[in-house]
Image (cartoon, rainbow, N blue to C red; front, side, top):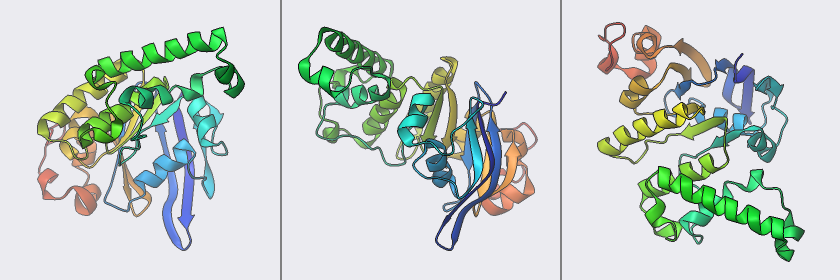
Length: 262
């Protein structure tokens, strides 16, 4: 059964149709990419999946249950976490505090219990701190735990945001242009990291413009153009699809043999 399923999604902004008739599935354990030119509707699609936007038409299911009418926090509690094109952190908080914020949807104690510092709340807070430290350590960021997030370099901010998303214990992780702003070595490290995350049982759906990374990393690719799906399949099939080459990939992939990576 599909982990995530979209059926005929449509979203308009005034007279602009950002997405139209978008249907696809993400299977458990997949690394799947959504690619396409700027303005293709990729981030709009992520905003629909995560609940930041509501579809004008169409339906979304996650783990067999409808989620297209839910609020972002409700979808997050179901097991969907995401990152953004531009890392969205609390710059005045420490790196550790930012990652701890990712556990908010998994906490049991409400405002009153926190204010009174009841014994159970203190124990839960220690667990949150320990979990945040573990995620930072797994990404090589533990040494920055007490640093203010606003003082970090761009690539470090992106990794902190990823650690925060992982702290939510997602079943499905949405990565919006995770390689943006990274150099070649950092992109290689990112690919290895994404594979390790998948090996932990987390399914990944990503938007990415770096085609070398996408073709090397992903099991399946969905291509959008002007808000409409034009192709879906394996990396080998996508990089040799004449329509995809014409509207997006260009000559770099035009003569690739089936199964050959760019």
